[in-house]
Length: 291
Length: 121
Image (cartoon, rainbow over all chains, first blue to last red; front, top):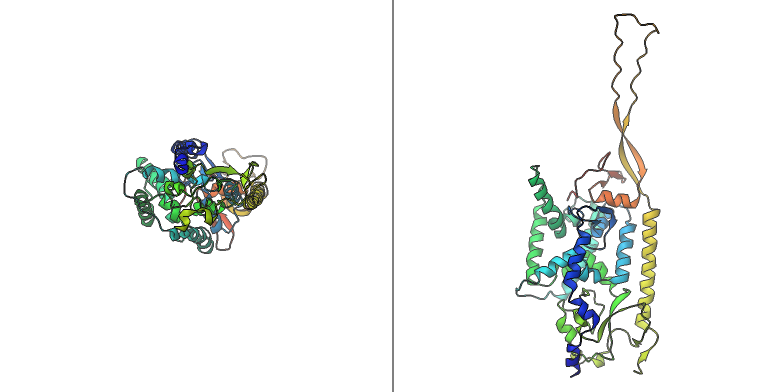
């Protein structure tokens, strides 16, 4: 009965989560301003600055390029650490334009497959290898330099630029084949699994995911009201078990799990009554974990 | 209700401290990057050499004789080292405007006004 009551209950964050698609779409207007170019400022989301409409500079592109010229990117690092420390992967779930694209494609009714957990560690390999180490050692000319293979760059920068040049009857500069192949593969994967780019490759998601554990705004599991009904687990599309780890690095903070009243959005500024045993319930209180 | 306390839990206390430290660290990075970090960048500058002046042999000009025309001002490029703010470097990066030279110094790939070409990749 308690579980039924929780399913029927609807917290503020759960009601807000139904508007997530609209919030993401609204933020597109921030990232895609045709007449505003603030390319000297790093944005907090994954969006290629080669896009003709881009407003801000892509933080991952800046990190990779600064690594290639052996200069420490204080502004990009500051932006990412500030964003991660404050909101964690809320940026991925609510603000990122590439995440929005994946969520839109996820609305197409196709069979969905789960991504194995271990593939999530590839993100850290991409971050360390393609964003920091390879650019630092071999420069921007190396084929594994992140921007040379980035599907967001292909979709938002390379293809629009090819179209622009063709329409202007100028010689077309074709993007590399590998970049287009990777884009095609990622777009195809979006049709058959939830956010494949975020879950497996996104270096920005890797940074924000790590920050989930310490972010100022976070998901709290109230163990006194959690009955281990696993509603949160069933609603999560990213294979996260919120009542076990509400600060999982794979969590996109889409807030679908807050349909259960035991999970709420909280912040370090709230000084109200908090559970005394941390965010997660104990193993003894979770029947589902035992089974 | 007995398990509810008024103070944040131990895990939450760690979160408060860690988030606060990270935000302060980020603020310091942003302030330093925006205000004080100005790496040296080599850039080419176009220099206009003054035209060679043509002085007549004397103040009195012989009628019927034309003085030679003054030569056109010549331009040349010279490489200078400038301190570029980090935000300007970020903007240059977005157009593929900075590269690392073989001597290990950062160089601008263009001179004069920034090209409209976007990312070279």
